[in-house]
Image (tube, rainbow, N blue to C red):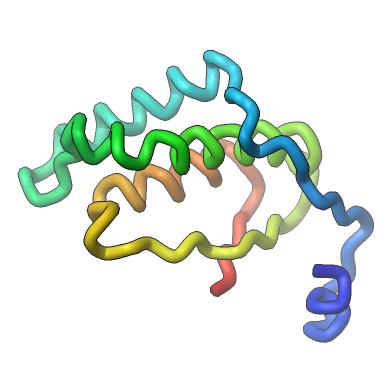
Length: 116
């Protein structure tokens, strides 16, 4: 990541490689994500997130919530956060759940740039 940032002439002061994304996120993160899901489920039928789809992607969502926790801890005072854009698998995750996932990662943070 450091060489990539240098290559694109992006100045940075801190770079942290995160370990422990498989740990359980705190309850507050889970509650916020449930509120995000409720908001998405109030939309049209094509964006509704089913319980079975959520269960199939539960581990991915859990890692995203833990990532958000780390971002709050390490990057809440940053001017820009650069993250790798998670690539959705069309058959495994709907547009609604994918966007809710991105929303949960970037919620209440400084500007976040997702790069692919």
